[in-house]
View 1 (cartoon, rainbow, N blue to C red):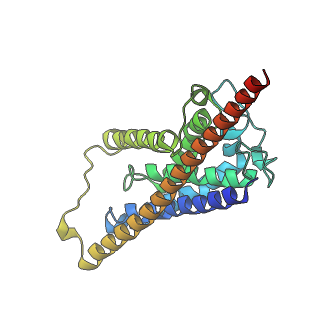
View 2 (cartoon, rainbow, N blue to C red):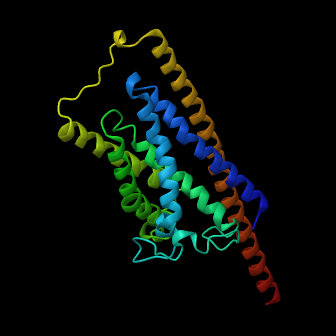
Length: 256
C-alpha cells in the first residue's frame, strides 16, 4: 500500500461527497420556494440510501468477480472481505478506502438525476426509482467499465466518470423528464414569473445557487487534479517500464 495514494483518495472521496449537498443547494435554488425542501432532500436521501445499498450488495455487484462481463458476483456482499488490506481492485489502496471512494460516485450519480424530476415526483416514488436504478443500471455500468466487465476488456478507460457517472445519469434524467412530462403530468409547466417570488426568496435562491456553484467548482477542481495526477503517474510508470525493458535488452545484446 502507498500512504500518499491512500491519503489522496480519501481527500478525493471527501470532495466528491461534498458535491452531493452542493447539488441539493443548486437544485433547491432553481425551483419554486414551496419545493425547495423536497428538492434538497432528493440529494441528501440519495447519499444515505445509496450508501446503504452500496454496503449491502452494490459494491459486490460492481467490483466482485465477473459473470460474462456483465455483472459481478456476491463475494463481497455485506462488505465481506472488505477491510484495511490491499486486496481490492486497487492494489496500492486499502480495500475499504476504494469501496468508500466508489460509494461517493454512486451516490452523486443518483443525485444528479434528481434535477430532471424536481417538483414532479413524490418522495416515496423517488426512493423506489433511485434504489432500482442503482441496482439495475449503475452497478452493471460500473462493472462494465471499472470492474473488469466487457467494456474494460475492450480497452475502455474512464478516469473521470464520463461513462459511468455522466452518460448514465444523463440518459436516465432525459428519460425521466420525457416520461414525467408526457405521461405522469401532461401539460405541466413550471411557473417562474418574477412576480411569484418575494425579495427574500429571490435572495435565498441566489445564495443557494452561489453556494452550490462554489462547492461544485471546488469538487471539480479537486477531481480534475486527481485525474491529471493519475494520468501523469500512469505515464511515468510506463516510461519506467520502457526504460527497464531497454536496459534488459541492452544487457542481453551485450552478453551476446
